[in-house]
Structure formats: structure tokens, C-alpha cells
Length: 431
Image 1 (spheres, one colour):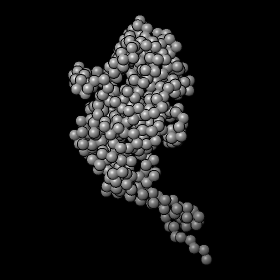
Image 2 (cartoon, rainbow, N blue to C red; image 1 turned 90 degrees about the vertical axis):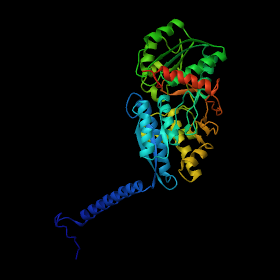
Image 3 (cartoon, rainbow, N blue to C red; image 1 turned 180 degrees about the vertical axis):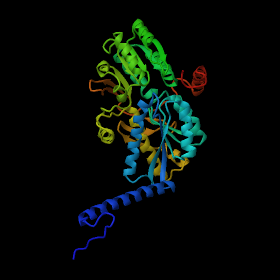
Image 4 (cartoon, helix red, strand yellow; image 1 turned 30 degrees about the vertical axis):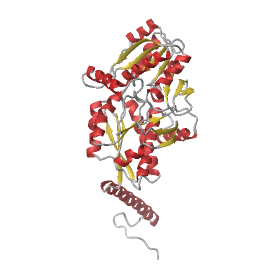
């Protein structure tokens, strides 16, 4: 006698195979639901480690910042796939800086005070970092900042995984001085980062024996470069040094090419254009220009090949990686190493041990400098190719020691920064 289950609700004519299939689906749903409920239980009972990711998800800078979120999430996913950290799942909590420095500060406070994250990975512009800095110091917390920046800052509560000028801008300008020409025109966005970088570059060029043909800025929300380009045409520098941020590069390079300024006539070396930014620019107009970074996607290293492959597998073959993404990625792993060494997420223990961390990153060997929380990094110069990538034309070969306060002492630089801040109406960028 064949056993048939009594399926009054589904009809007596349902066969055994159909019943078994539905039973399996129900089991999967029940198990999946239980897993979700259990994960929420763990999250609500201290069985996860919450980390903050603070970047602009909206506003004009989101174009550049959202890929940083992706690189940070890739590192977190790798850690979770390997069993998490201290036996716990790493739970990312996202904050939106909304391309506004004051919003970054408010979101940082929320992540620390309300969400109780163990660390924050984030900030893009120096204006946003400078607003977040007093927040992480107030709570004696920890921020990992992945962007190359102007330096003139050091905090026990911030780990700087991006390059400072002596690791990126100085080598790039020196290479340009030797290979391209001895007079420079400086063009940047009008906020603290480019202003300080160009002040340092002027000092460096003077030491080299070169000259500054001109210097000009546009606000972050401004994209009118006609007068600046006219001045470049008039002064005829040998090299243009570019620190214009984000989408404004579209208007800047369009104006350059309209005026007949090509890489063959007056080359540009950029410290604000990487692989991600090249995607929004006309590659045929950019081929032959240069950029200075610590990392390029095209670097031939096994560690880099794995990083690029994993990133593209997760986010799509059309995606690219850049220096800021790589610094965000290895920053997560350096933090995780410090947590493992400490055996706890206690901030005082992690801050102490993060100072001695290093790893074989996609760019090469990187280590945290215990004296200033900045990172020893390589320096490279790349030339833009028709493929939208960079061909490395020069490399330092070894990691360069970070010097966040070059030329002058901290007091002199503090006075300079104070003048900028007050000149912009007690903020870190021009309106």
C-alpha cells in the first residue's frame, strides 16, 4: 500500500514528488529565515564588531567616494569570509557625508556615540577630515584616512594610509623638472588640500631651481577655467601641475584643449586624477599627460593582480581601482591585524598596536610610522595610455618615509592654516 500524505489544503491529487519538492522549499525558507533571525540576534547581542564607513554617497564628490566604499567593503568581506575577527562577524555601518564637511562631522559623531563602531574608515577632502578630526579626538576614537593629502597634520586618533607631499608631489614634480621642464603653472580647487599642496610645491620648486609661472584656483562648486587657461597660454609654462578635484577636471581639460594646449605642447602632471576620474574624461584628449601616485592599477605584482581580480569579480569587469581605493583596502587589513594582535577591539590597545603594523599590499610593502601614524609608501609617476590606464615611467623602488611637516616647524604651518581657515570665513574651503 502506497503512503500518501493528507494534503487537504493543496488537493488530494498532488503526487509524492511534488509534495517532497514543496517540503524542501519550505525547509530552505525556514532555515534561511532562521539564519536571518539568528544574525539579527547576534547583532543585537554584541556578537558582531561594528565598523563605520564614512564617505559621500550623495553630492558632487560622491562620484569619487563611492568606489572607496566598495574597496572598504571588499576588505571587510574578505575578513568575514575568513571567519570574521576574534570569532565575530564584522558589520559595516554606512554614514553619508553628503559632500559637506559639517555633515561629515555630524555623521562621525553618530557613528561613534550612537552606533558604537569600533573604528571609522572614511573622509575624502581635507576639509571633511579636518572637521572629523576633533570628533575622533574628543571620543579618543580611531579614523583610517585613505587619501593622499597635503600633510601638516598628525593625530594619535588618525591613521593616514594615503601619501603626503614628500611621498607623491615632491617626487612627481622633481621627475617633471628633470624630464619635462623647469617652469610650472599651479591649478587647483580652492580648499585646504590644494592650497597647502601648492604652497609646498612652490617651496620645492625653489629648491630645485625652477620657477612658478602662475597659480590659480576655482571653488569646488565652480567650473569656469577660461581665464586661467588664458593665463597659461600667456605665461607658457613648461609643465601644468593639476590639483583640481572631481568633475571640474572635465571643464578644465576641455578648456585646455580648446586653447590648443595638448600634452605635446604643455604637459600636465595631475595629483587629483586617477583611474576612476579618467573614466569621466575624454581619453583621447588625455593620452600623454601624467599623474603622480603611490599606486596604479597597471602595477605588475602578484598581490596587485589578486586585488584587481577580486575587485572586478565583486563589482564588474568594467570597474577600475586607484591609489585611494588601494589605501582604503589595505587600511582595513592593517586595522584587523592590530585587533588580532590586541585580542580585543579596545581602542587604546588597538591604537597602540596599529603603530607597528605593516603588510605586503598591492602597491608593495607598507608600514605605519610609529612617530606620526602616517604610512611608508612607494612613489610613482604614470603616463596616461589609450586604454585609460597609466604606464609607470618612474618608481622610487622602495617605500618613502612620510614627512608630514616639511620645510617649516609645526607652529609656522599652524599659523598658515589658521590664515586660510579665517580667510574662508572659519571653514576649510572657499564658497
